[in-house]
Amino acid sequence: MQAYAARRATQAAMSSASSLGLTAYDAEVLHNSNKLTLRLQPCDVLAQVAPAAHQCAQREVDVVQRLSEVGSPVAALKTPEVFVWDDYVVTLWAYYQPVTTQAIPPADYAGALERLHAGMREVDLPAPHFTERVSEAQALVADRDRTPDLADADRVLLAGTLDRLRRAVSHSGRAEQVLHGEPHPGNLLSTQFGPLFIDFETCCRGPIEFDLAHAPNGVEDHYPGIDHHLLRDCRTLVLAMITTWRWDRNDQFPDGHRLGIEWLSELRKAPAR
Image (tube, rainbow, N blue to C red):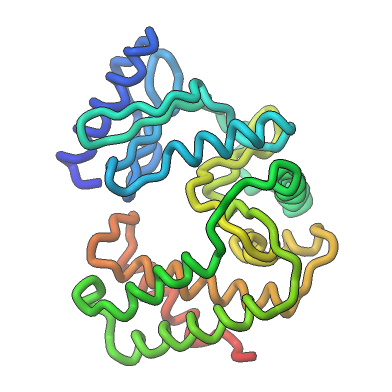
């Protein structure tokens, strides 16, 4: 968020916490992109704030509540209430002090993801198909007004990769289930209670390899029953998707332009199947 929007979002978070009787007169920004993540003090609560027009907070809260009931490794809500303040939507969560700055070991990462997938199969939550997210990326690539800085050759590369791998993954024949959607390291916390997943607004339905494509290399070695050819396709598909987001003129991901250039270079080197 830009500075003015971030100040308004912070005010929304503090006001929402105060409405619950929580004391919040200071806010530390933990992450700022299209959504603002804050640590409120002294109540020590984590707040997530998003523009009301571009969020699905209620669905995320519902998903986490259902998963918590079956013991899935998810961060806890401070309250299931979704607050609407001016043009912002606020959700409040437990804050977890990181227990280590080291990367979560691949075996622990895989174990947490496997337990999450098991919980998602148990509650069988409604979720869009992963191809809907691919379609959003395809529409962005096709819209020159929204991606004005994307060179023609790179536009052709992204469009072709998204189309080819969308069809390849969709027709793989693998079983599909509800997925996290983006279980990358930034969405897995290292806590005293073990690894816990956050940010469920991207839940979708697809093969488990689509989720594993977001995890660091080596995690798949500890997750049973993986189709490694499909995983390779999913990794390239995910790379094409996140590269596309970085070329959106409205993208506010930190250092997004540099990442867009870097990931395009990686995508050119990706092996064709």
